[in-house]
Length: 414
Ligand code: HEC
Image (tube, rainbow, N blue to C red; front, side, top):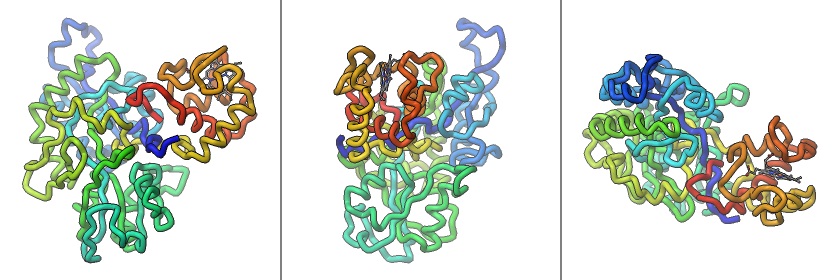
């Protein structure tokens, strides 16, 4: 396994839903030219700064601008932007466009990006620090906060900083600690951590709305650890018509979109990731994200977007993804319980299908494969005897399978 950071990403990140779906029952492709009466947006009901039911988030504002450009009114279907998002929204037909999709979320067709942001390091500027990167030696002495399973957690691990790190949850879990992602920034303000490493929009919004002055430094991509991401809108696969209309709207309204991002303190970086500039004031100047140069963005194809990149990507399900020890134990289990009898020792297939290519029978994400190994998919022909495996064993085996994945990197959704 490489140290490549991947799992993070994920999937469901963003929300989804959409546009256009005007619902006149008689609409036909021929009529699709007429402006839709409504843009059906899959919105997250409670996830500022991105979106909420009171339409206070920046994605709500951007949706309004885009809908207006299409001559439509945004109509929301609410669903938390977490695991199962696409399945429960776009796929279920309740809405047509999800705003805030990190490029790479392969359950949807994504538009060209409308902005690009990055992870940032941030601290109270009354601390007097002057860091330019995570390599600052002083960090060895400081308390650092980061959301669990996000790319910068890997960056910190690579620098041997994990002993100083406190992790925070990226998703609100009503059954868990009920902490909001914002807690990381609140703790920074309170001094519980000295430095926070967070997704730019979240940190930028905290800087904008908190009493404490916060310094923000965007982080450059690192080999194998992308730290900046293009953010797009996602529509149902095959809905090219809507995608094209949205892209035209992005082109025409890019300046307004950037102005909204600026208002919320979102650090917008240039395509290519590296040393980005944070727009510190005054409109959208110096904020070239989005525009149209992104089609061939190297960062986007090299790795899946971070969970945080989306308004609310779920954290990766499998705690062992990317964990070399976990994958090694998984490999041992894979042989112990006989997976190789059907799928081959390297996973390339034999009596049964390959588990390392990018063709999947029931889907590629962790949830589906976990259920398959557990014998919970009614249509499966794969034996169900593995239901006796402990959850943790299944995750380790899956981590092994992920580590030998040989398909298209752009299709990684775990
Ligand atoms: C008796 C043969 C057999 C054994 C043993 C077996 N599988 Fe499978 N597996 C299948 C078949 C057949 C499929 C295709 C999906 C289906 O129809 O259920 C499959 C599908 C899969 C897939 C999804 C591949 C795809 O392309 O969608 C994964 C992952 C997988 N198996 C993992 C495992 C693991 C891990 C083990 C051991 C714990 C295992 N399999 C043991 C027969 C087997």
